[in-house]
Image 1 (cartoon, rainbow over the protein chains, first blue to last red):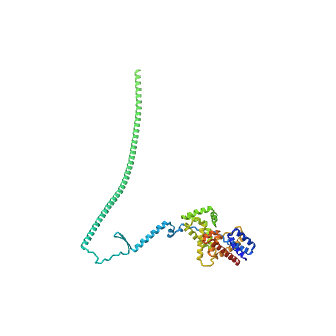
Image 2: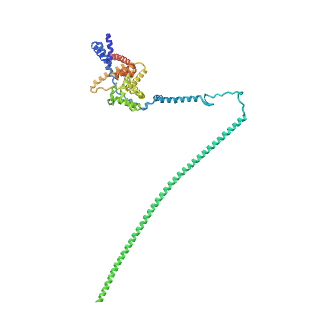
Image 3: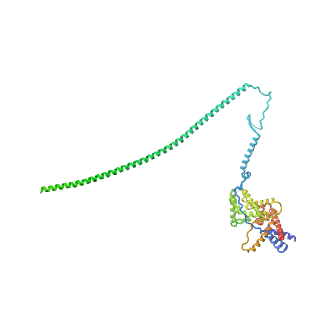
Length: 266
Length: 209
């Protein structure tokens, strides 16, 4: 194999992968036509690729779907997804919370003294005053002041207690009155409903009864009227019959009279 | 059903998406970024065959390949918001899948891990061949596949990934460089070195058999 073959052999796999320019491909083709070993190398590469193609794609054994629940994120991922403003806000809140917790743990004291704010940690430090530096103390005065303060405090407490009690009583009265009022309302409504129902029922009953009475009365009147009419008809018929008989009798009498008159004339 | 899906979704290998399919894919990606898992599953349907076969050829085991494929899609779903639509979705997805495969291969002890208990389904034979001829053909085909798998298993994970992406997935060198995140020249040198190894191994296995 020559040095030239070595360079051409490097081109063979590139040619297989379509990585040659047109000129390189043409040059390689010319060399392969002339050089048997390189041609054999080319055939081997072609055979290799042919065998590789035998491992073709297979169908999937199942589908690889994902579901919304698979997207559960941890808090850090959620935090990273947020905008800068939100991240800053949350970081500030966490920092503040941390500071407050640390303060509570370290027993931070914040107090105002002579117009200035004082921050201290742990127990407050008291100044030791030697007896020689202490001013003179009037015990009676202090006692009087203490009693006055205590009395005032008791008075205020009693006043507060009375005021609270008064408020409680008023509230309970109002609430009781309201409660009684509500109960009365409910009872009245109930009574009204019942009475209304009864009144309606009674009215209905009366209506029914009067209807029935009228019906009966009408029935009775009708019956009596029919009876009267029948009686009247009977009488008229009788009268008519009597008249007819009288008429016949009268005719007979008249005829008799005429016959007598005729006889007398004859 | 898979054949019908393929005809509907199109061959997703390489850059085989046309403008309509790319537009559709962009819509699905945007919906997935808003949390729509159904839209993401459409992307899964389009790309699962390519990704599964990539992992299968990389890992040489159907169960592991299925696991790696599922992990890749899960990872893609969780990180879909990081995907910028100016890049190709396939490139991004291939990167996730290849990284998963390389991680799994690195965790394995060194040596050949070709699975003798090969339960993977193979494409059906031509139906018009006589039974005896088709059996012989299938036998030689299976022999060839077995040799190739053994040879592929011999490659280091990165070389195997490059061979897979270039030869089987038909990606360009630039796309492979984006996926593997190494320079273009490194991609080419590793690919040709891998092909040389495969040529030697397959030639040697053929002579040995």
